[in-house]
Amino acid sequence: MTTSEDEQHAGRWWYRSWRRLRRLVAVARGLFPLTAAGLLLLLLALASLLRLGIGTLDLVVFAAAGLGLGFVALVLLLVAGTALVLHLRLGRRPALAALRLESGQPQTTGWTLPVPRWLPLVEVGWWWEHPPEVSTRSRPHRDGPSEEVLPARRGEWRQVRRRLEVRDVMGLAALTWTVATETHVRVEPHRGGLDHLPLLDTLAGGEELSEPRGQPVGDRVDMRQYTHGDSPRLILWKVYARTRKLLVRIPERAVTARPRACAYLVAGDGDEATAGFARVVVERGLLGDNWWFGADGTERVASDARGALDVLVASGLAGGGRAGRGDTSWNDENDAGTRLGEFLTRAEKAGFGVCLVFLPARTGAWTPAVASVLASHRLRVQLYTALDDADTRLAPRSRLAGWLLRPSPASAPRWPDVTAMSEAFLRLGAPMLAVDRRHGRLLGDPRVAAARARRTA
Image (cartoon, rainbow, N blue to C red; front, side, top):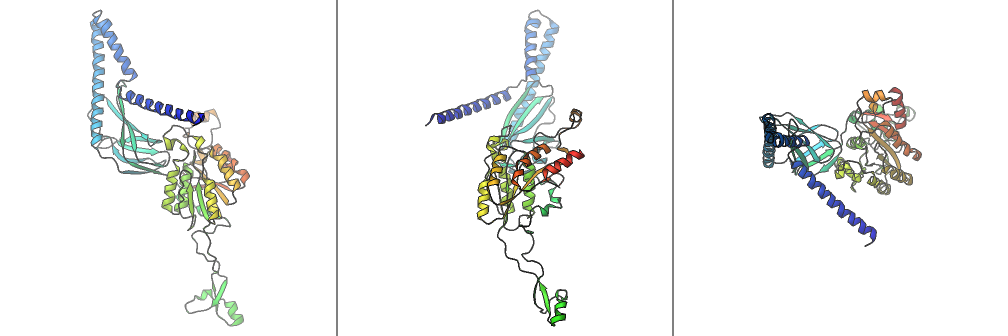
């Protein structure tokens, strides 16, 4: 074993030890009942009781310190009792079998927190530790607070870990612990308003890609002898006037085409709207009858709508980012590992003539890798990207506008991100179109759409 391998294994050992230590510290910190304010009040009450109340026999300080200690003890008792009741009730409750959610959409899970309503001075809250990037909100329910979740990214997981917190209303005591349940969670990309996009049928085509839902026949340019049952509208009357033969028009038989259209989704930061757009293209049958669909994060190549949706969900865990590992930041170092080159090679050998490539709306480590792959392949490609709420994705022009306008989420791509991404593929000569997922609008070329939005902003 070389020195670099020894250092790598040693680093992994230290990293595992450090993670284990952090986990133990987090557990101990969550089970310590006093907050900083509660600990300070307890120390002040004890010091006042011992030094002034007992030491100098100051009855006023003695009574005040006693009340402070009694209040802290009462709060600790209420918080600990509530936490114990919750832990016992949740342990007897069966876990939810499965959750099917859509990214970017608030949805109820059916999970309620069985907290007693009559307990005074106590508040209860919770959030998801795993899967990551899922925000929670409580809704009033007769059986207790009901859970509503808002997943930010697609993916699929086998377990849900909720972090529960019981605290008093004054912030003196708090207990937190983790409750894990074996629940299958599947988060699919949201379609948004793209189902009503009127020009969506034109996105899959060019001169080399025919109407996917049409019959393999051409115009009525062939002729045959009239037979009983043919419509008089199809009779060629001019031919009959010259030759006295009844001939009718029939459609020209087209040559059966080989599988032509395929599609691929490149996973990366800012690809959630693009994944929703790819889902609409697949589910509306815009790729034709015989097509392939692939994506980063899985070696599977789908040829039906259900399989393509599974591929889209699996791509949410690609790149080793926060959705895959539960980290708090996206890991661009691993996003360059795209499988687009392998997919295009297989598609070209299978006889496909065009590939629809769906790109994230923000550049990343994947950008030079994908640009290099597209430049080295002969298969014709059409590039697509998507973003949400295109009209509000312009950076504020002034500091005053930044103060007055509510900022969009940091994870939402903006027009500068989209234009920077499109310029990276400009020299390839491949056409690129952008769509607004939320409003279901075709924006056209990203650079032109960004300039138009900048003029109208």
